[in-house]
Length: 72
Figure 1 (tube, rainbow, N blue to C red):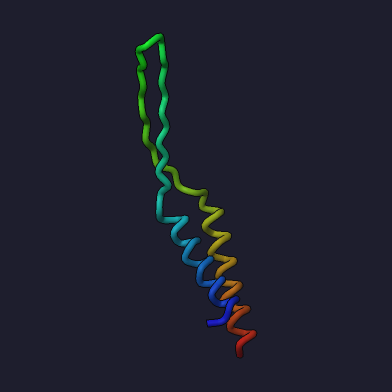
Figure 2 (cartoon, one colour):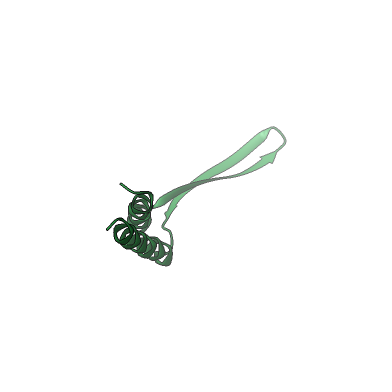
């Protein structure tokens, strides 16, 4: 597999994953008063903006096409 084709396939997979897989985030919030500490941990998941996934997919397709034309 040529280098440009490999990069294209990688970009395509990353673009599809960016659209489908959420990214988990954990945040710790706390207040310390003297020796006592009160804390809350929050968890939420965010997805990348669809434009990022779309750009990765388009870039992957362009790299795959350029790699196949260069090889042929």
